Length: 382
Image (cartoon, helix red, strand yellow):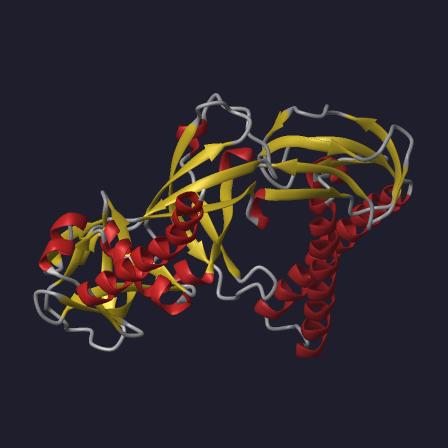
């Protein structure tokens, strides 16, 4: 009974001694400061730490972004009427392909009859003024004319021509043939035509609807001119330029990837999202047969140009407090953490530049760097 009691009393003391012995062994095998780690040869071999210099490699990174399909303002048309009146006929349906200048609806207006009448009267007055000018011109050639009379008929002719031309332009703007009007063929309706070639997206009126000059009758979209409008974070904007290749994945077309090129980068940054809008142009032939519409969601991958740079394996880079670091070799057993700025990343390698010494060309830890970072972290906690 006494032996058992002594054994139980001695066991905790032995555990404490063993634990203290282990700690002293660890402390004897390594030296640590706030950003420096010293290891023994045995530790380096056991962990598998390798060192080397940054390599010159050709890298081409990628930038991921999301956005939607959109059209330029000149590829979206709103159909309006130049005259007030009522919609007598609607000549197209939603989804129908139309060409620029094609009549889409007929608007009835009694005022255009008066405009056509005024044009005929102006044409007749211009013809009479032309005849009067010609008579005065003949008299002058015979030496019997009075210069003042010729000047008067010349002024009357000029005014008659101006009035006729102005009314003719108004008729042509309304789609009326001035030649037919001059022959007495009148119309009480005008055609409302499509401003662009495309597809009828929306019809916003009904037959008989009252129309004024501010009423939008229809909307036309040239979907063959679709582009991707994606948002790129400010940290990546410097890596993008016009002409870069991109791949666009469509959200509702399973497996469909469309090639494109960066066509425009906006000059402003959104304060809320800290991103800029990047427009990616699409060749109409690449979307032939696909049902694409404005505002469809897309994801894009922008491919950076290939360039030669200093790069290290990805496992040589560690993160700490939101910054990136590598461990440089002070000697064969002593390593110090130094901040770097990363760039392109491709095929397991990442471009780096030392924050405090851009031209550094010494050796660094190229594998198992996270072990050194964990040792610094553990030391800070202790």
